[in-house]
Length: 462
Image (cartoon, rainbow, N blue to C red; front, side):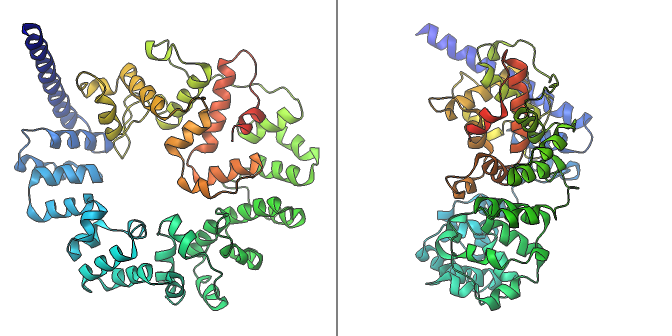
């Protein structure tokens, strides 16, 4: 019994010591840092301290650079102004609570993506509570709650059409908007080129939209931006319409980061099987998937650069080379090996864990680590590796893990039997940094392995 009491006393003392250390660090950083995201993070931590008063919270307003959601919620809790607190609570309310709330709160907390996941009955309740105070939002909800939402959508003006179609959940589009548009509606919505291209991109990237995809044959090339021209090229390749694909790819501008010349040359080879396009790629010194792949296909030697790694650290010593390559690739993309990096969403350290993830992981440990320890390499990596283990299936697959963390759920809408190269391009469209990740993963694996890993073998894991 005495041992248990002594243990609890020691733990509580440690917790208190960590809190004092945190407060000192927070105040020092607020005083010493210039206005920016890093100072915002420490202001957010200051607002979470128990002894921060309403007056002290108000005084931080002039110091804030970017008022994001976590910062606003913590400010509202400490400032204790009724109106500000009400806005915060509405922003943070569950859909279940919003349904029965008042009009102002619904307008603040409910967007079209959330609304499109509600049942017809729930949408009717929302509509009833809006009480025509927000006529524009009410009209959008009326479309979603109607017996056949598509018939209501096509009668709307161009702005309302796009506000709804481009902002509802993917499942709602698949279930309720997957019909061929009347020519009159199609002609009307084409006048807004920017929104029209977003509309076409959704169709090209979702094989489940079979009826909407009937419009692809009527697409005018001059109405498309280069991203959609490239997606349409991939579509023609998949449908084995190689003449159209080749004609279209020759119109593409290679002045964009996503449409670099090696990619265009590779797909010219992919369409024609003419090795001269691969030869053009192998003369490039730029590091990208297609430079590596062209050299691999032609069996040419290519000198790979050495990349930055971490010194031997206890927590990573037991990882396999594949696991290390995944970890290093994520660190490179997320923080560029900067252990004090803080993102605008308050993700921390080398691996850019969010505060929510850290809080969840810390429940497994005896007591909360101090704020400064969460930036330390050993602790940050320990947390992230623990997080990866919760996601990993029986067989390790770096690509699956990357996509499970950062992937877009719309990947599920891709055709099942896509060619691996085309699948890579589609996933790159839907997942930020995916192409960069594959390049880094390939380079790190080849830095760590004695035998060279092939691009082909990485593509197979798609």
